[in-house]
Amino acid sequence: MSLFTMPSLGADMEDGRLVEWLVKPGDRVAKGDVVAVVETQKGAIEIEIFAAGEVAELLAEPGQQLPVGAPLARLTEAGAPAAPAPQAPALQAPPPAPPVPTPPPAPAPAPVAPEPRGAVLASPAARARMAELGIALAVGSGPGGAVLLADVERQAQAKAPTEPTPPGPKGKPGLDMAEMRRAIAAAMARAKRDIPHYYLTHDIDLQTAQDWLTARNADRTPDQRLLMGALLIRATVRALARYPELNGRYEAEPYAPAPAVHCGLAIALRGGGLIAPAILNAETRDTDALMDAMRDLVARTRAGRLRNSELTQGTITVSSLGETGVDALLGVIYPPQVALIGFGTPRVKPMIHDGRVQPRLAVTVSLAADHRVSDGRRGAAFLAEIDRLLQEPDHL
Image 1 (spheres, one colour):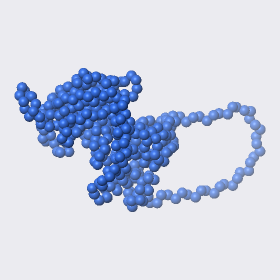
Image 2 (cartoon, helix red, strand yellow):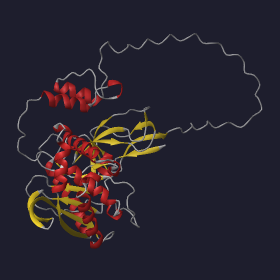
Image 3 (spheres, rainbow, N blue to C red):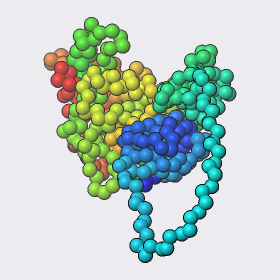
Image 4 (cartoon, rainbow, N blue to C red):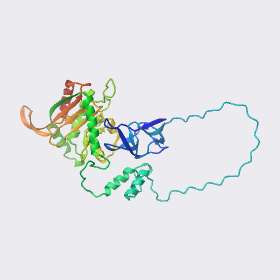
């Protein structure tokens, strides 16, 4: 028997509100299954379970605000045999009892009325929300086609008229921007207090990479084209293979680099706010696969459909200013990570190439790193390795 508890979805989380259960007592679950939806300052997050077993009991009700670590459900371990019933000690057989008259048979129970034909299979939260909105859904995305709360909300959004988001602290339903700012500020204050930062910046010539991208995208449809951001992340991930101390989570002594690269991607939300979910196992993905993962992650982040593993397992974060027009950023490490890479806006600059000053596309890259696990010399070599890799995009 084990407890499934409210997970911590980042250094800035203290509690969360259970929105919906996606399992019920008696369901069998496997590691990685999504079993609940929890709302935090970062929006509604799909919660995965990290142990296989059977749901024995749900200990929390939808709507409850629960602190990190609070019990949510009780599980029996997968394959655990039932405890044998205790055997009574052998006793001398008693004399036979006199026969007992057989009682008359009890009347058969009345048959349970079956579900009416056409009844909708739906979670209680989904039923209540459908009644509130006057929406009727026959099939949803849950087990056996059950309608879930998320299905109802998607249908409600699809039917709602498109109107500009009204100004105010809540730019999107279920996401309190003021609360998100408070949580981000608390995490960053902790980072600056506990992590001894050092900073480095370096200008990288991107013209070769841009020319390669132009040629690579020439025959692709817009939805299949590679963006410069995919190349920047691929080069960062590849460079970590030579400088692994910058990839990890400082959670215990002695510090040990992470065996896989779960690369966090800072994503700006429409209406304000920032979330940095991770592309898991980024070192196993080529540039095209990273581009696909980036598109998927950005879409799900803005739709409020992230999983807790994407928020809790990041080992390094990349933040890019894109086309905002700012040359550089100096970031704050997201604890318990030990490094953050920042890319400014690529722009044409005078640079020396082949012995001549030429207009070339360039970007300023910055490194914020934890002095407990690396130093300026190693950090500088890491940025130089990113530069070297971007000069050979064919090999990325």
